[in-house]
Amino acid sequence: MSTDETPSSRGRANWRMLLIEVVETAVMAAVIFFAVNLVSARFRIDGASMLDTFRAGEYIVVSRFSYWYADPQRGEIVVFVPPSSTPGSMLDGVLGRAGETDFIKRVIGVPGDTVQVRDGQVFVNGTPLVEPYLPEPMLDFGGRVWDVAAGQLFVLGDNRNYSKDSRDPEVGLIPRAQIVGKVWAVYFPIDRWRRVLQSVYPELVPVP
Figure 1 (cartoon, rainbow, N blue to C red):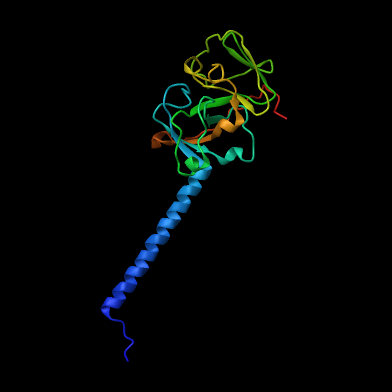
Figure 2 (figure 1 turned 180 degrees about the vertical axis):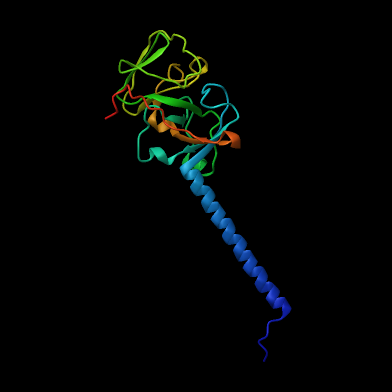
């Protein structure tokens, strides 16, 4: 009895090995895809509310996991679902589905803060903020005051005169649960790639 492989049996074995490799590669790609989308999200910037920090057409990476172990801080830029919309499910996140109505703004007030906008100036706990990232002076907003409660954030766009943010009753204070994540970087266009860093306000007493 001969145990030599025939050309046809060798061909079938090669096809089986190739099929196994294809399946393994597909499974690994799926695992990586789901893992990446679980901890991050990608968005395209539309509109002018965050000029000059971001420009329309730029693509950003948002870290979902940053706020799994820490709370948002003043000066950080976040993406959130406005209160008038419903946050996506975890499945949406894993599948990489970005919300069409998600907003991007800068955190100005955190729980325990009192925020006031008066004479074109933002005050946090009575201290005027120094904000070099603003493209132009902010128009007066009538001296309103907001007390930021636990589980809430006060957010503003950098292009204050063209931003719908916490000053607007339709947006208001943002529930912590509506935050998608912290903006980490701009990744496209390639020539505009950059890390997005937190602005620091040394004039304010650190959050305890």
